[in-house]
Image (cartoon, one colour):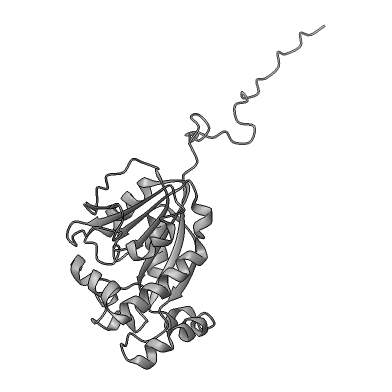
Length: 254
């Protein structure tokens, strides 16, 4: 079940907790994918990933915000030319292999057909491209609270998330977590949010972060060369193929 785009906008742009969550996750994304290295690249986001894409507006060749139809779409970024578009989970209006960097947030855990959605993500990603999947951590506090968007949809364990991505052709490159502060709007937790994010890096991944972040690359199967992989139906055994010995002709008597 996708959340409504208005609820997502209100959380990330109009609440203190949402702004803190946006910053905590975006800082990790920028650390992994430095904007200066996206020059000439196409950066896309699916779900409600636009809060994480702003640093790439001035560096990437093209930035796209793909928002699923059940969620709804909003114009983004504010005060600039709109780059967001309404799409179906299983049919994105992009050519095959055109995306260099793809961020998926609030798109996988809420999709009714996650495997098909991942196939579409695989299709649009170019050779050598990278994708970053951000989902609620089943063991974290944020997945247990419906006061934030991470309390909706299906949360994942790290093993489940990486297994699902591998099944759909992706190669896992690295993983990390974010949102180590509690999902609370109390001033103390908001003011100490940066501290908890720094401390959280040193804690075990599973119980620490509210969200999991898994970076993957597109794994292209090696082409099959005809004639080399054919099975031998009747393999030769040792000395196979040699004719049976025949008795030599008898020597005539003198």
